[in-house]
Image 1 (cartoon, rainbow, N blue to C red):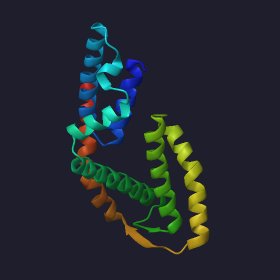
Image 2 (cartoon, rainbow, N blue to C red):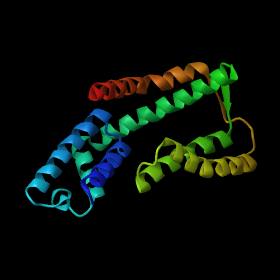
Image 3 (cartoon, helix red, strand yellow):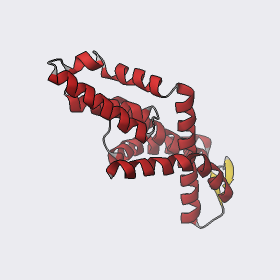
Image 4 (cartoon, one colour):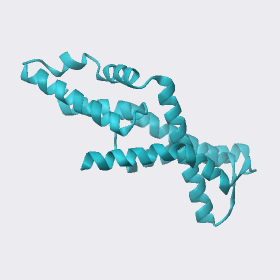
Amino acid sequence: MTNAQILAACRSNWEYRGIDDASVREMLDELSAHLEDAEAAGRTAQDVVGGDVRTFAAAWARARAPFPRRLLRMIRQIAFVLGCLLLLTCLTRWTTAVTVTPGQIAFWTVLGAATVVWELRRGSLGILRHWAIGLCVALPAAVLTGRLAGDAPVFTAPLWAAALLLLPGLHLTVADLRARRNSAA
């Protein structure tokens, strides 16, 4: 593997594991420096990361951010995305409450799972390709669930629930945007 491939695999693994953007950039800079030092010393990249890059990246992620903290961050991000979806749905339908059906639950759950699994297995393809692959899986799941479970509403989500879902992840989003802006400068 080349240094660029190793860095890309590590970035993908760390982003999947919920490491914040600023830490990912810091870890990539450190790993890049180690890889360059090894290359200058006549060693290979495998001497630095070992035989399996994913295992190396996973071990570093566990050391950098313990599982409970990463899990809490992921839950906050999921709540933020759900809040954005609920707010967008209320705004596009011009309503203060949204009825949620089993087909909608299946669609968004399968779309999210397919996106995460594809990212984990294949690496980054870009958001449009991820969504295209996710849609190919999520649409049949939503139609099948709609046929089997019917279109009866499971629950009704009020507009104020969007604010409750957005709040836990809002500071993470702001912090990530600031870190990106500062790293670009």
